[in-house]
Length: 331
Image 1 (cartoon, rainbow, N blue to C red):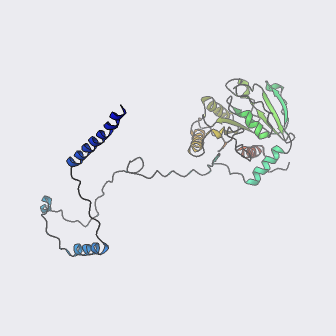
Image 2 (image 1 turned 30 degrees about the vertical axis):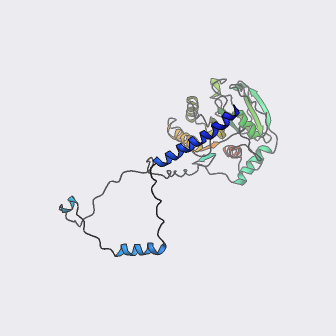
Image 3 (image 1 turned 30 degrees about the horizontal axis):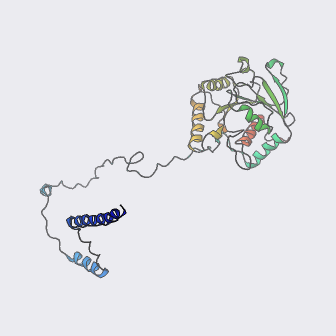
């Protein structure tokens, strides 16, 4: 058995060689390799010969004998060129983006106010952080509230818009205003004293879940009402109704875009600010608020390594002091 296996192996090898030789004999002849390129001297000589050659006359085309129109001395007619700009496949370069409008930055849009300086922002932070805040009261009915003589500002917004988180960031005290992921948890009107009672922040319950009809008419005493609108969702019909009511009652109000960290910096934030300005100027029955929109994030989801991770808090503090006339006074 072993002997037959050893004798069979050479036969397979010889048969394979015969098949291989036969395929090579019947295969087509390969073309010769391309000649090597000429040397530098020969290439220069060939170019010189081509330059001295006299072109031979060729047969003119059929349309060469047609009569040509006479040349006129007037201006040449305009020729329409097809549009191959933005949106065309032949246009390889991306379209040039329009520059941002004046007053628009990453987290603010000011077209009637001036951007605060670095010293003014530091002064606003000192006013809010010099003394710890104090909880004054929480009531469900306005008749039981003793406001006092300190200037007040109110914060309004739909339920779960980030109002309590923003107030905690403004007061630099986590847990002062009750926060919850479930909407409608803030059912009472709360007041907080800032800098030993020189300023009062009012936390209004979110309208939509735990709001009351009589709350809308009780904020007319405030210096300014800050209406929070979530940046990623935009204004809802209830937000527009509130803004229209504030404008008709003559209450100074300002729009704040909350949770601005959920939008990507660039086109998304720019579109949110420009859309909100358009609504303020044309979409609320002719009622316009303050020409300044701030983007804030009291408790951003993305933790920034090092430094203050909150967004727009110092600018909002300065705006509050301006509304109450405390930005230039000594305290």
